[in-house]
Length: 146
View 1 (cartoon, rainbow, N blue to C red):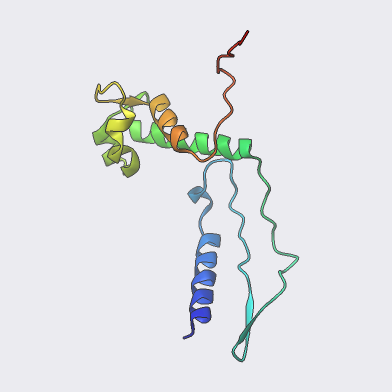
View 2 (cartoon, rainbow, N blue to C red):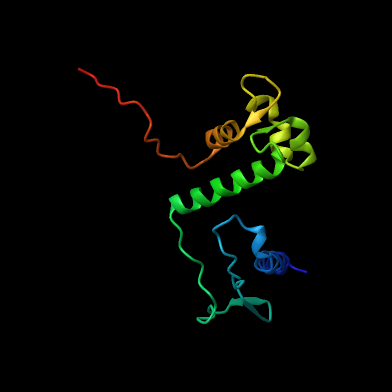
């Protein structure tokens, strides 16, 4: 199998797998829209890309704000689920039991005051600091220079 064929096979397989994910695999507020993988026609040794199907569903356009809101809602739901009945605090053990490995692995960094538990705001702050998208902060103090 040539490299092009192998890459095409992997690309098509991953595209089909992503399109077949159930709706609950996506963050709240984001609908699962089956995307049509790129279609190729093998003509001898040449791969020809076919034109996209105009009847295929289009991917919805979302603003950065909408994406951020969906991600925040997903993070809050994940925290509430992991925190269990307390719904306010989360321990390292509960994070491990809830299979939230990232938070369990970084628990010491998230728990800034080292009291053995974290709140949702601690997790949100930790995640926001590592986000490539920076939130606009309205509560930032204004510095007046005279």
